Image 1: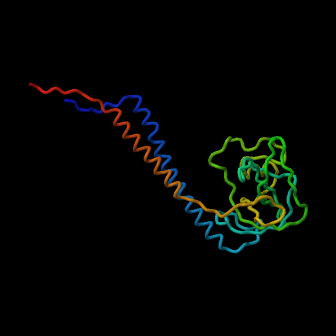
Image 2: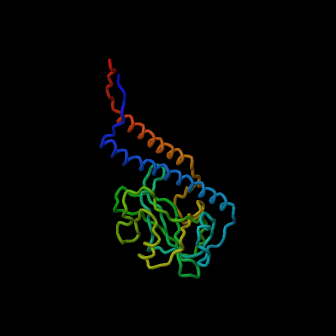
Image 3: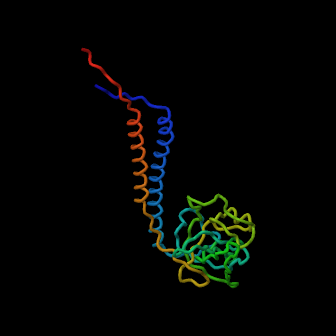
Length: 243
């Protein structure tokens, strides 16, 4: 006759102790992301129903402003434009063109995302961006600049030259480089507005169910890891019956 006795080995124990908390942490992280998406979707749907308002320097800058429709008057700053790199449109690589707008009657600026342009195969050749040199009125939606979770590199800007080619909008970095004060939100310019490029922003449609599904997968990996750990470390022992 034989029985099994739990005798944990050093290597499988170390592997389990390393991987198990990682799987569990990733599961809870995905659950947190799902809750964030639910909250953001609710905010977007509620604020999309509110009327557009005039964006001025004295207007509030709290989180309640995100996704609000606004219009703002001012003059574009043509010398300090920003190109947000690695943006894909219909399978082609390009940039988001972000141009600072000096608000009318103020020294404060706001960043205007004017849309997507295709990049040249030659990385050293930047697109030629036209900028109107007159007073304009921009209509759009306020959004908070965010860094993508997964980036190719932690380095945001390649050089100090203008236009600035950046991986994400960093307001503090932009303020420091241009020695200007910026409103803490950017404006996604309306798709039918003049002086812009390809703007297919679409509706914000966040899917928290996908993150919940990912969370269940990570928790399943954790459970499977424990089962494998127990199975691997159950050693067979021989038993003899006394005669």
